[in-house]
Amino acid sequence: MGTVAVHLLGPPRIEIDRRPAPGPRGRKAWNLLSFLLLSRTPATRERLAGLLFGDADDPMATLRWNLAELRRSLGRAVTLGGDPVDLALPADAFVDVLTLGSGTWVEAIQVPGLGQELLEGTAAKVGAAFETWLLAERRHVAGMSAAVLREGATARLAAGDARAAIELATKLVAFDEFDEEAHALLVRAYIESGAVGQAHAYLDDTIARFRRELGVDPSVTLLRSLEMAATTVAPGPSWMKSVAAVESLIAAGVAAVGAGVLEAGLDILRRSVADARETGDRALESRALIAVGEAFVHGGRGRDGEGATALHAAVAIAEEIGLPALEAEASRELGYIELKLAHYERARSWLNRAIAAAPERSSRAAAEGVLGAVESDVGRTSLAIDGLTAAAADGRELDKPRLEGWALAFLGRSHLLREEWDPARISLERAIDVARGSGWMTFLAFPQSLLAGVDLAEGRLDEAKEGFEAAFALGCEIGDPCWEGIAARGIGLVHARRGRIDEAIAWLEDARTRCVRIPGAYLWVHGYCLDALCEVAIANGAPAARTFVRDLDSVAARTGMTELLTRAQFHRIALGEPGAAEVARLYAERIDNPAILRRISTLHADRNVPGPPTLGQAPVAAPTAASRSA
Image (cartoon, rainbow, N blue to C red; front, top):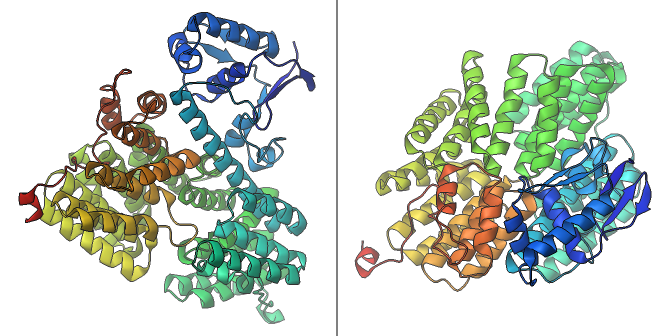
């Protein structure tokens, strides 16, 4: 019956047996096909007719005609019908946009339309709800494309193919001309290729563009990218090039980084890689590369790109020589990087690989703990709770306090977002105890802020204020922008609850920018801060409220933060924007947070309703004169 390939990136087309097939007549048929492929659940005919053909004289008849057109174009190997409408593709079918999300980076980088817009050139007159849905999907596809290009460029650089890395990184910077890590990656690729002069010229031009168009200097990550990329460490003397000597270097470098002596520690670890390579011991080289990668990721503050390069090289060696433990460790760290960047499809790919490769329980549990955070970020809270509960138990039984503390903190966050206050408090109090007991002070501010959020939701304003301020002070002390941001968000909400709206908005605006001041910050926190800012701004008639909502909508759509994207639609409802209620229902079908779903059930197609309270908090009402004087 022929192999089917559906290309939705760029001008859409269908191929059967690798030959062009006649496409469906009418642009709306392509819209229908994209919705059926990208929606996570089958849609009823009534919904499809209303979304796409509401302006037709007979919407249901028009839907039937378009379904018939799609059947004709897709061929007999595809089944399409029923109510709800189900589209079933054969196992060997290819859909470019689905490959971006589910394939390996090697597969995704080969997608013919990579970098092109979803359904390019197929504009058709549709309702506001579908227009909003399509814009969000286009943003998400663009975000996935950028993530694939970043991963591909980094992997090529790690493999020593600098020219291919330059080609991919050049495409990457076209997605966002102010993506500092993308520019730094291109600089590193130029240096590795030997084009030092070109690297200098490119960096000078990029810095000048930041100053000219944004009025600020880029972060240190970009400003020092040339210097960092040019850093080389010569191998040690011949008598030190033994397995034992290299292992000592790795231990010394890790200890130095852990003590806060980053650059000296990185120098030692770089030398361990060079010396391991000289010994010819590939397993030792992979271990040294993992140590370098983890040092950049967990201590480098904005230097995840350099860490990812080392980790990609480590994965390649571990896979080549059959060392599943090292493959699992490096894959987990790459998944953690993608979690922070909110590249959730790429994160799942790496973390599932880590879980599959892990030869023992501890390694598998660590990857499952990070995967639980991924699922919590996007609103798949039941999966998150199951995975995080298991990871916390494994951490406790295996005497891995950081694994237990991590899992408990994200477990508590999942319950907080579900407005399940008692289990949230239990998990977060335990996470704080574990973090303190193990000396993990660089993580402590996160569960502290979340626990203060529980206090705020339950009306304990004094306790919430104290908790947020303690977390903010600790975040500032250790210089972690993510923990500073989430604590500043909470301080802003305390001000809002006490009627100090100017102070609240100032703190919330600071929080949303503070938490992403360096590349590689945990992007979910940025969305979380924006959601609170939207809520307070709308409730109090702030002129910038629509801008804040557009920013949240854009960030959540591009990354796939589906729960936050659903909440953005609630904010749009509160602003009276058309189609928002239907879009909120569409995206809510992808999440299982009962707190959000309860509010979805109150929506009616013929009217808007006020948005829900800020995530995990009570409603923020406009202040009265009495509350302002409190």
